[in-house]
Length: 338
Image (tube, rainbow, N blue to C red; front, side, top):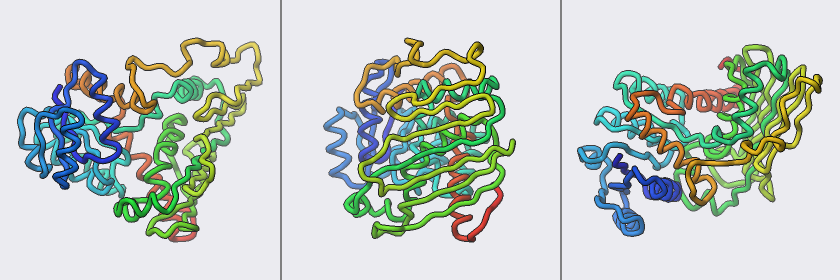
């Protein structure tokens, strides 16, 4: 499949490296509104076609799939236009910056039948996949409490380096969205109510640098989310799930807690399962590039097999709706419905 990348910034490099690791896929074209940036990217990754207008790129019939790597508030417009131009789409997180604009992407995917892959690569982590299965199988019993620790460090220079970082969502939409998506995906049930706080506590920016939220799930389970870009040094992203039959906890470094009341029927500890170690069918660095490559290959397979990609827009919108709910609750000073 011939891929094109729109937006030749930092994350575009990960997409280019991922495609380079996929022998059946080709990085055919790239586009950026800054000509020098597009030209340099094309030279670095040996791209055949270079564009400075993304609409012109979409009119190129040779481009079969488009990776949208632009600022977040451009994702929806570009994704919808790409679908209507007959392209398959890879959309970086978040799907959009508001629930309404994200819904437009969902609607367009359903109307056009286009294949759309959303980038939430943490869903490929073996620990996350295993925990999701345990919850679905009832191994933890009724879920009582789940927590997500999303503590990053971004200095003032980070916010000053790109204007969109000050208007297109802060700690939640730019960093925390991965963990929020993962937590809700593992639990596998709808959010019912949201009580959130968000504030700009230290950085000079128009977006939040710290947020916290309490979610009530459809089953009555409670979820606590803590998210900041002020945590120095940066901490591993971590999750803990408490059920009536046990507790599991893991972070970027591995599984920390694996305890079950019924020892005889307890699932084997991940350390005892050689297949649990992080693995990918793609040999590629950096680490996140492995998972990007997997998702790009899955999109190509979905087009060939005429099936839904692994992470479609109808799933990716959940994190956006939740984050917007947290922001709305913080603004109103009270709980809101999902």
